[in-house]
Structures are given as C-alpha cells and as structure tokens.
Image (tube, rainbow, N blue to C red; front, top):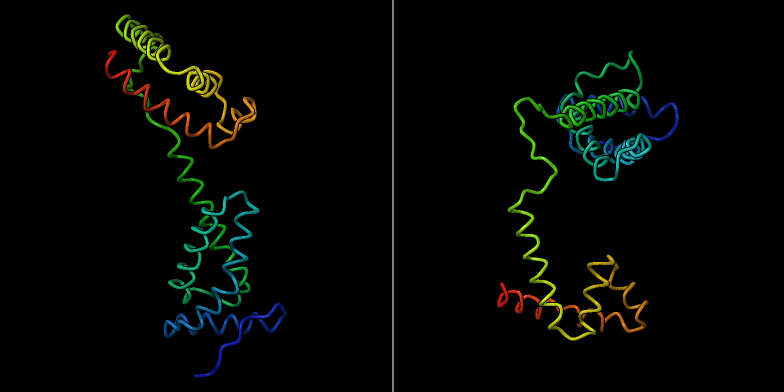
Length: 193
C-alpha cells in the first residue's frame, strides 16, 4: 500500500484530498480517513469556536462532521468545490441543525400549565418561621468563633477564602471550624426540631 501524505496548504492538496476521499468511499480506507481527520479536525474545531461554540460543543460538532465525511465520502463531487469547502459546508450545516434543535427545545408548551403563585401560603410561612426559630436557637448554642463563620458564610454570602482574609486567620482554620460548626448545628437541629 502506498504511503499517504497529509494534505498540504497548496493547490496540489486538493487533488490529494480528493484521492483520500475516493479511497474512503471506495474501500473505507481508515488510513486515508486518519489523514483527513488530522488535517481537518483542528480547523473545524477552531471554526466552530469562532462561531460561538464552547470547547465541548465544538468537539461534538467536529465528531459529527468527521462521521459525516466518513459516511458520505461517495457524495463528494470535485467539480462542485474543494474538499475543504465540502467539509466546512457539512460542519456549517451541522452547526445550524444543532442551533435549530437547541432553539426549539428552549420553548415549552404552556397550555394547561398551572403555575404556583410567588406568594407563600400560610402553612409554608409558619413552617419557615419555625425553622428560623430552630436555627436561631441552634446558633446561640455553638461557640462564637463557629457562629461568626456561619453568619459570614450564609448570611453575608462570603467564600471561605474571603472569611479567612476578613478575620485574618488561615484558610485551613476556617475550613476546620466550618466543618465543626456544621456537625454541631446538625446535631442541635436534630434535637431541637
């Protein structure tokens, strides 16, 4: 079997790429496909990312494109354009199809949909009030240094690294105190409620 050379970026490349596609179409030549894949997969991925796809979506579209090249190689007609044009047209069309599918899946039929009101019912309000009381009682029973960490974390929505900086204590200390505080709070809430 003759050695297959990767397509180069010159006019002769189109002829070599056409030969590769014909070999794929005629005999499912895996070596020819590997050469085309290696030449076009990175270019198709870059194309997809320039068009707004993230890396994972671009990878998926590359796979779909190259599977289509494998399965539709016999449909390529050299008179209608270069191999590169044919491959990028496949990629473009797959991207458009994907966008259409994603766009239609964003909408849901709302007929017969009975949404809950945003208002809390009396039972929910009472339950929330009781839970708040339980939490307040449990917080009052844990050491001040742990209570302070929980308040900063949950009420002021601070990350553990921010808490460490604010209190000027090591991050490891914050983490261990938080863990101890969680354990104590859980035990206290189990006994209170």
